Image (cartoon, rainbow, N blue to C red):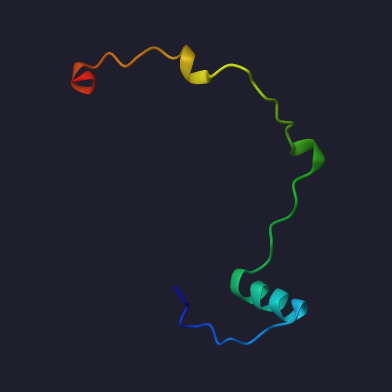
Length: 60
């Protein structure tokens, strides 16, 4: 599917950055390192610990 606004013109990296800034504005500030949270992988499936749905309308 081709965008009708695409002119086929190739832009330099600087021109593309400028057009992106004009279209989307300023990027938000980066979060401080203290605000970042480390991810930890879990071996268990969290859905296993939830009780089954006991609604008869849902269970059919």
